[in-house]
Each structure stands twice: as C-alpha cells, then as structure tokens.
Image 1 (cartoon, rainbow over the protein chains, first blue to last red):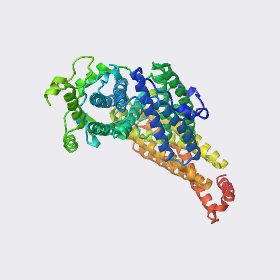
Image 2 (cartoon, rainbow over the protein chains, first blue to last red):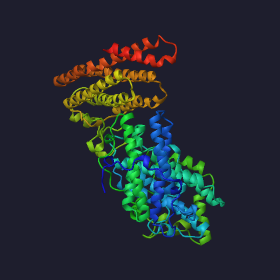
Image 3 (tube, each protein chain N blue to C red):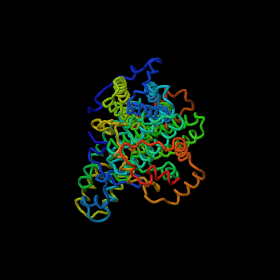
Image 4 (spheres, rainbow over the protein chains, first blue to last red):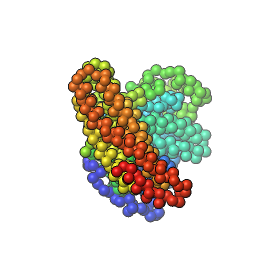
Amino acid sequence: MTFNPLESKGMPVEKQLRTIKQLSSEPYDKREVDPYTRCRIIAMNGIEVESIMFSHQFNRHTDILEVREKLAESRRIEQQQQKVINWLIPGDESTLEATIGYEQLAVDLTAWIARMEPNPYLKQVYDFGLLEDFDHLYRYSNLYELLEGKKAEHLVNELTEIMPGRPTTQEHRHPIDDVRRHWDKHTADPISKLHAMTITSAEQQTMNYYMTIGNRFMEPIARGLYAEIGMIEEQHVTQYESMQDPAQSWFEELVMHEYNEVYLYNSFMETESDPRIKKLWEQHLDMELGQLQVACDLMRRYDGREPEEVLPAELPAPLTMEPNKEYVRDVLAAQVDLTFLGTEPVTETHKRFEAYQDAILATDAFSEDVIDLNRKEQGREYRLQTNGEHPVERLRESTSRGSN
Amino acid sequence: MTMTRFRKDTGTIIKPGPMITAEPDMIVTDEQIEAVMVLEDGNPAFVADSIVSFVVHERLGIQLYKVLTGLSNNPVLKARFKEFLADSEQAVDVYEQLQEHLGIPLAYIPPTARMTEGMDQKIIESFLNSGSADPIALEMAAINAVLTASSLCVANVELLGVIADGMTDEKAVAAVRNAIAELEGPAVEHVEWAKNARRAMARILGRSKTAEKATNMAEEMYGAVKAALS
C-alpha cells in the first residue's frame, strides 16, 4: 500500500500510553518463529532505540519548554514501544541464538538495501559492510555449535547461507578508513535517506548489544569473539552514520526519524507472516503516524518549514526481508578483497591498513580461534551452503582447512 | 508560494563538494553549468554559484521570519517580521527571475549554497535556546538575527553590482541591474530597521538597573520600538 503519511493523522500521542502490564508482551515460540519475524523484531527494536537516543540528544540541545515537552511525550511512548517489541524475544532463546538473529538481520537487511540503493557509492558501502556481517554470522554459528552443540540452520531456516565472508581479521581497519562520504539532503533519493538511517540504527543496536552482553559468557573464546566482533560493529556504525548529511537541522532529523519509523512499520505490516506480530506492526504504524504529526508541527513552528519540503510525496516501496543468497555470492566473488583508503574503496592493501593490522593482530584473533576450536571438536567447521561451493576458491572448506 | 527547498523529485542537480556523494545523473560540473548560461566571458560558474548562494540566503530568510513571527509575543515585532517574510519571498522571486535570465538552473545546488544554508540554519537554531531568554532578551535576539541576516542580504546585493561591473553582455547586465534595483531597498530597510530597533531598546533598557521592572519596561519598550519605526 502506498500512501502519503502526512495525510494520515494516526493515533494522537496522548492516547498512545500503555499500562505497565501491557509492556511485557508474550514472547514468540523460538521453535516456530519465522526467522524473518525474529529479524523484523530485532530491527524495530534497534529503530526504536535510535529514536529514543536521538530524542534524548535533542532534549539536551534545546531549552524550549514546549519542544522538550513534546519530545518527552513521544519519547515515553517510544520507550514503551521498544519494550513491547524487544520483550517478544523469549527468555529461552540464548544470547547466542539472539546473536545469530542479529547477524541474519544484518546480512539480509544490508543485502536488500544494497540491491535497492540508487546511489552507486552508497551501494558500494553497503556491499562492503555486507560481507563483514556475513562473516560474523559464520563465526558466531561455529561458536554456537561449539558451546551449545546445535546447528544454526534451525535458526536461519536455510533462508541465509552460512560460510566465510570477508574474514573478520581483515575487517580491522584504521579508524579514519571507516569514515565515508555522505549524501546531500537536497538531491538524495528519499529511499537513500531511509536506507542509511535504518542500517545505522540496526548496526548501532548490534554494537550496543555486543557491548553489553559480550561479557556474560564464562568461556574465554565467547568473551573474546564478542569483544573482537564488537569492535567491528563500532566501525560499521562509524561507516553508516557518516553517510547521512550533517546539514540536516534537528527538526528535519526528528521528522525523518518519525518518517522512517512509519516507513518500516508499514513495510513490516505488509510483509509479516505472523498474524499476532502483524497486528502489532499495524498498531505501531498508527502510533508513529501520530508522532510524525507532532514532529511536523514542531518543524513548522521552530524550523520555519513545511514537512512537504523535505519528505517525499508518498511512502517508498516496502522494505522486505527475503533471501539474498545469489546476491551475496556475487558480491563475495567480486569484492571479498576490498578495503578502504580514507573514504574510497581500494582493491590493494595499503600502509595504514597494514600498520593497524600489525598493531591490533599482534597475537592470534578470536575470530580464527573459534573456527579452529570447532573444527577440532567436530572434525569440520560449521557451514550452511545451500547453493553450492563457496564462490571464492581460497575460502572453500578444504582449502581453508589446508591453510591452517 | 515560493519553493523553499529542492528535492530529487523536483529535479535538483548538484556540484558536489569533496565529502558528498550523489547519483551520477544529478551531478553537474562547472562546464555543464556554463554551457547552459547566457554568459560567455569571465567566470560564469562563479556568477552562478554566487547568485544561487544569494537566493538560498533569502530562502533561509523566509524560514527565519516564520520562526521569529512564531516566537515573538510583541505585536509590533510580529507585524514587522511578517513584512520581512513577504520581502524575503519577493527577493527569492527576483533572484529566481535573474537565474532564468542568466540561464542558471533553478534547482542547482553548488557548495556555496550548502555553506550559506548551513550558516543561516545556525542562526535559526540559535533560538533552540530561547527557553532561557526572558521576553526582552528574546526580542533583542530576534532583532540581532534580523540585523545579521539582512546585513548579508545587503552585502549580496553589493556583490551583484560587482558582478555586473565585470559583465559585457548588455542583456545580462540589464537583468542584474534590474534585480539590484528591486532587492536593494528592502534589504537596506531591514538593516536600518534592526539598527533602529536596537537603539530604541537600548535607550529604554539603559534607563533602569533592575530586572524587576522588566514587565513595565517591556510595555514601554514595545511602545518605543513602535514609535521608532512608525
């Protein structure tokens, strides 16, 4: 369904408050959940967290009482929305199982966005990041088998393949090689803006999640792997947030945050397979439409602009969680050796990259140790290759085993 | 209504600075801009970039006056800001007509425009702290914002004159001179009004040492400002 959110009033913010008991939503059954339902839940949790943190930052940059009050009212509702969404994740889903959900989301969200992105430079950046999260899925899946004795295929349901991407050891770059160019707010396609906001939120949530839960393990290999991949997630947040135009005003950013939430709830409402969760997305869409109205009103009064000046005439086509196996394979085959020099991709290694690698990889990396340990334990490493051999010869299992 | 913001679907094109990425079919070079302009000598791209930054400044003026009209509780100032808003809309029209005369694409964003927009946006965003301003401080800040913004309007009109002096195409020179004739009066008037309003407020406020008299002073000040501008 395509529509213009500005023409829909939605649920008034003052009617959006839930009771405390409504916040502890009934979790899904981890044995039956559609993997993409899990992904959508993780995604919208990240989107709400970003929205909340942005609102807190905005609150710290203004002392106009009315603006602070309106932000506080919407923020309280967003905090409730976050609880309702994140509490759908069941307690019997282990931290590692949730982690594999996070990485499956990162893979198929990034791949879909890369496929749809009209700006070639931004598409290149998404392709670049895609291969790194794809590798994280493989590393965590091996940790999962090593620690819990289970195979990740029952989590990803063969919708996403599991095999090496750009090896995590090759992802450690000098900080200044993670900064990117940004789109211009006047010329960027609306979908480019929404893509960058969505990916930034998802990666930020992943970064925050690993920062928080990485120390909850007893096993040194698990603690180490979370620490290592957690560092890469910070690189990804740096990468994706720098794609957004810093020339947007606070009110423009506020409107764009609310608009992106409308876009995503509408997208997920249209594509959700679980009727109960679909109803939740529909309810939250109605709530976000109400919050968007508030943001637009603030923009008119305190930024002197009409929201129509910055928003598209209608909502872009829905974001869809779907398999991207062949796309990922194509990108892997073509770009596994890519790195960045400053803001630009390069195929050759360079001095700054090598110096940083020497500094941070002075000893072995946990991301390689986990594969070695699981291979030792199982007699093979864990992979899920539904579409044939790895597209990069040196990353095929027999080849990679032989090289160790 | 004056269009105050350009988007992809309104045909915006850009000469991207070093940190910007844009879709290839939206990127233009100096040579492409010069190819569609009527000017053949001198540095047409500089002329285009300058004039676009001038019109962007006027567009941000529209935003500024909308915000100030909403923030002010002083009916005299409100009325004056509404007048200035109309003047800014008129200035945008004049600049856009000049762009058409010179062949400068209306939806062209050079780096100068982004920088101008960024600077002007910060003037508007300075009012995010207006919650800590008492009514008089707020009115003074609003007048200062008018003075700052309109001073650049005046300076831009002066630069138009310098640009016209360097042109040889008679029609182009005439178009620039016509634009100057339309823009100069209101721009100078805004600056003079702001200076006078500051003087009027200073005279009133300078008489009292105590903030307790703020309410009475405000009434007196509003009257003084009104008298000074009537």
